[in-house]
Length: 354
Image (cartoon, rainbow, N blue to C red):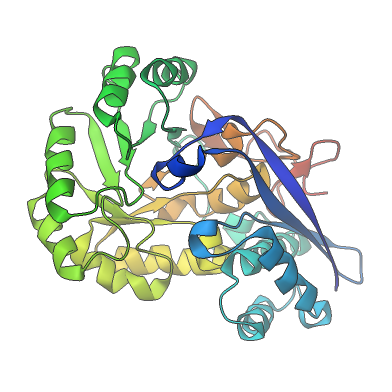
């Protein structure tokens, strides 16, 4: 195998603010790393890493890991052995490993002329899967403007965790009074009592589907269980749930989990996490970071395993170098890509699954 990788900066269409980056003023761009694997016969697979500082990963740590990879140990014909090699190469580096995992599945699926979801035995039901559209923390007038611009999306997701939470929810409801809403606190509420007060306030809205990560991931299990026993709204773990080994603990304090490819290491581990969550009786969500259509499309191949989808990272950027799964009116679809192989993505100037 030949391995190539390159850095790329995704430019956001609007300053992105969530509870964890308010002190820095939010972000206007997000750096990622793309990878390309090429087999001796010329078959190629593409992947993407969208590392998060929250998990102590950056494009520098991704590139450092990729530089250490012996690509001759990777094969589209033997993904289990390839992933075993990557897992043993260095601890951590899940975002970097996710890029290679995605590229391996892309190439393996195209080698047998199948889309990834069929290679995994999952399928993909056209017309069934809807993604939420995320609204970051901003001023109430800007919140209202964003919501009006997202009128085509049937489900919204509002980021909370600022002093203007009440005003921002009111601004959202002034523009979309009846639309189903997910809420993400991003670890903002520091005590179980504060979290419960906010959950009770949110429950009065009457249209909120769930609340993500109301307390820090470092919160005591007993506090999370206390909150779960009293909450009027379903709670989903995000920062508290990175790996399959977290599922059992999350079941004590949450009703569901948000699984992201870059958190856990790629398509394979995300699939294992979603299946483990289902066995544990938890609801499931597929989420994302700020990502291009390449990584969003990779996650979309697991949509059959998810009760909720928040795969909109590519919709928040202005310079997406790839095309893939579409989200017209929030409906995820691979139908516009004529090439039914691999991740079903293409570079902006190329053909599907180049």
